[in-house]
Length: 256
Image (cartoon, rainbow, N blue to C red; front, side, top):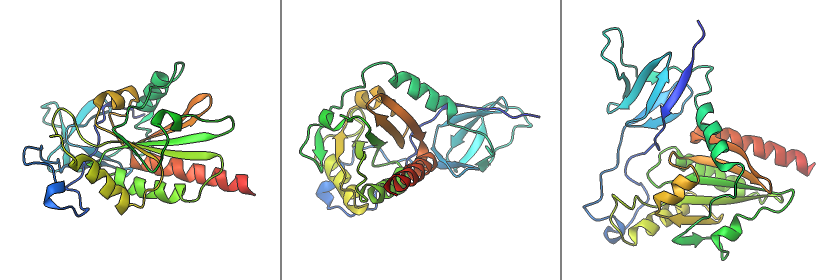
């Protein structure tokens, strides 16, 4: 029997406490919300945060603390699963299509940054893509577990200084409604960027509106822009890794 799968909601995957050392003054006040620890996995190696809901074969499965996948219904035959089997199924296709549709056919959203690291340019100047060039954008958050290895891969990729491909990071440093204000937000981002040797330009903001405008409510989100608009979208760490490999191969071929 053919199998179908639809992602109903994909939330940003989050990891445990940040491992980058900070002084006590750099840490968020005790009023900050605790970091979620639950990470559910699918058979392709992608991870999901607590609360993510996926529909497979007509059945809704939710990522719950454990972590494991539990059915939303109460059918006796509906069993919990430690790993969600999505073999051979493109889980993210509906989301990618929705993002491409939302960002196509209109001017791209502006970037409103609290700070721009590793560049003296204005954030919106960094969005300019000359003809025959491309811009690779990665949207991430400090608490996103799969963002961190992808951030390290992207730092290595950007370090090769590709002629026709620029890199721009966009990080939501904190949740404006739940996290307390303070310098700890920027310091945490700077600590992670130092840990993963990130030297490409990075827009740091704490605005949910910026994330929503760029369809980056689930991270990591990787986007490739040309002077004609959005060309490719990758959701999650595995898709982001595959996209970087494709771009690297293309750049290497172009060098020969």
